[in-house]
Amino acid sequence: MQTHTIHNLWLEYKSEVVFGLVLSVLLIASTFFSRLIPEDFFDNFLNPAMSFALAGICFFGAVICLRHLDNNRIRRVWAIILILWGTCALIIVALFRTAYNPLYVGNAFMKSTPMLIACVFAWLLLLYPHFSIHPGKVNWRRGGLYLLPLVVLGVIDHVLPYELRILIALYPIWLLYELLRCVHRYRQWCEENFSALDNIDTQWIVRYMVMIGLSGLVFYYLCVSNDPARAFTQQWYLMFVIGYTTDQVLYRPDPWERLRSTVEEDTEEEPNSADAYRAKLEAWLEQEKPYLNPDFQLIDLRKVLPLNRTYLSQLINAEYGCSFYQWVNNLRIREAKRLMTEQPELQMQDVAKQCGFSSRNVFTQAFIRENGTTPTEWFAEQNH
Image (cartoon, rainbow, N blue to C red; front, side, top):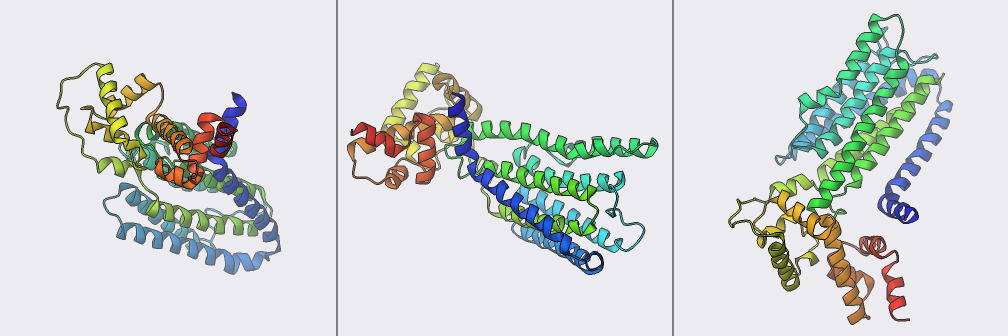
């Protein structure tokens, strides 16, 4: 069972693992080659130029998000974050050659003040996934509560004669931990409402966490580095994170928007027993086979059952012992087995398409999770 679970996790997150490994290699190589950058050249030209470029990317991304707002709350939030980030980057550039530079690295271990400022940047970046996961529950006031522990640490650090560098360094790790807890609930919510998670891209949050986690590791290494030119890696990597995330905000499907576009009506019938609902539901499934539609979602069940989303989800969980996502994929796999048996000449990509899967790869992963073998292997065993 444990081996099967690990295999399923690998199938689910292998692209995120590869993504993280590739980024890690690039960051290590960049950190190594940054030693070749002369310190004077970096301080006088390269660092200010890269800071200006980062601010420009932030403002450009904010303008694009605002121009294509389309009443999308997540784009508005990301645009505000980019404006704040770009403004801070310009302020740091303006103070770079002065004694008031808040992020000077120097040759010693970074002081607590610049670490506090860097943690504020981490808070800004981690606001976006929280808004994405809880668009109806998280607002700027609640998001500000995540900043409260950092404010307390900053006050204590300046009041006491000791620096709290270690505790300050743990703050972004705590933010990532809180986000990881939310991701699990978000995944459950997606499985309760949608039949195709690849179109929703629930792994995007995990990929975003990988990017932010690597950014934190680069910054912590920068804190103990004796060469300010190592900030070169941090600068270009932040440009990549900002640009990549802006692209995802603009083009990644938003599951909350998909649900908002569906109008839920009040219950029109008196509640029936679960057995009556199940019989009515299975008769509709047998006749219409709506699960063959790749965009089939929980709220579509209202065509035959007069229940809201919450009761529909509870009904599926109680009657079939699984989430809506798992239930629909079981139906699709059952249909796929029927097709492979009755029409053995069909190609696997055709079977996947006819059964409601978005691609052969998604079909194969779902089939392995359900049967422990690939569709091709299962077909060979049936015809042995």
